[in-house]
Structure formats: C-alpha cells, structure tokens
Amino acid sequence: MDSFAQEIALEEEHILRTLTALQEAQNRSQTTLIELSAMATFLHNIYSGMENLLKRALRHLTISLPGSASSHKDLLDLAVEHGIITQALSEELDAYRGFRHFFVHGYGVMLDKAQLIPLAEQMPAIWMQFKAELVDFAAEH
Image 1 (cartoon, one colour):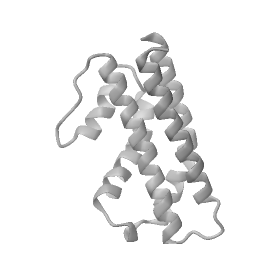
Image 2 (tube, helix red, strand yellow):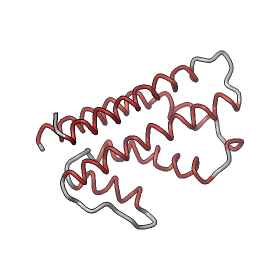
Image 3 (cartoon, rainbow, N blue to C red):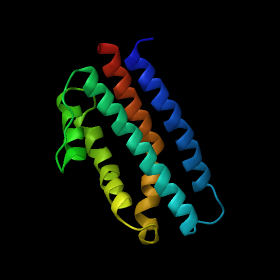
Image 4 (cartoon, one colour):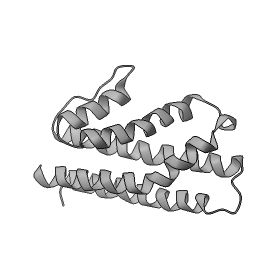
C-alpha cells in the first residue's frame, strides 16, 4: 500500500470511530447542551478529517495548499478544480465548513439544536459520498 493510501486509511479509521460516537450522542434519550456539545465536537472532528484528506490529496498532486484568510473555502474550491470531489459535494460540505467556523470561534452555549441536528443526521451520508469520491480519485492517481 502506498503512502497516500495509508494516509487515507488512517484518517478513515479516525473518522469512522468519530461517526460512531456521533451516532451514540444522537441516540441519547435527552438532547441537552451536553449532547449538543458532543455532537458539535464530533461534527467538527469529522469535517476536519475530511479537510485533512483533501490536503493530502492536493499534496499528492503536488498542489500548494491555500494559506489565505479564506483557506477553508479555497481548499474546497481546489479539490473541485483538481477532480478530487464534485461541485455538488463541495456545496454540501460548505454547510459543514460554515459550522466549523462557528464552532471554532463561537461558544458551545450558543449551539442551535435546529441547525445542529440536521447536520449530524446527514453526516453519515456525506461521509459515504466523500469517501466514494476520494476512492475514485485515488484509484486514478
């Protein structure tokens, strides 16, 4: 297995463990600030893992990583431009990118259940699509 494939496998292992934890938090009988904070943390971790994979894919192509104030958006744009993910998936991921920004710069007590729960519910499907597109990309490169 080459280095790029090993990097993907390692990151995937972490993401799958975090997805399991996210689902456990969603299945709790109550949805208090504690559960919401746990879900928010897991969503942030999973999205960060996806960004890490995009960075690895770009490095694999010897593409310079963005370093501007809009680097997270630029990362998605570069991933689309170089065929790592589709535009449609990038648009889906943009909601998680926006959430990541709020999570990093906001307060946990400001979490909005109405916004957080749909993101958590959709994450397993988003991950599966992301993984499928990344695997397709890796098979070609």
